[in-house]
Image (tube, rainbow, N blue to C red; front, top):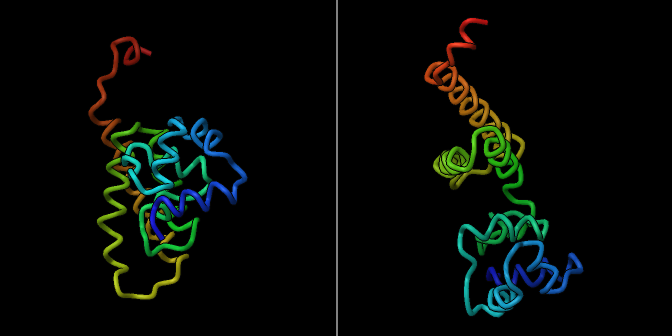
Length: 147
């Protein structure tokens, strides 16, 4: 199934008009129409808003082989948590880390719960490293040292 077909299907299942989806995803109705008709493909920067507005994952929308609208939800939630704590560049780093480690599962059949556990541990290690670096390299003000 193409991205456009998935967008149309998810939109109709959510009971949204093209206009409503456009408002929720912060894009134009014309963009929604062009995605659904296959005349254009959403930019990577638009995908998270579009997926969130549709109640599906970016992985579902972008992987033509994926049929589960919740595929990758756990990883996306972990990336969003990192984004809230450390900002967009850290979220990109976390997503890249997950993508590089996804290769471990190629060709195998590992239960989703074990995959989710691995990604949770990766996120915990990443957050611990970021907090450690913040503590070590963030300058402390003179007034903070005096207190």
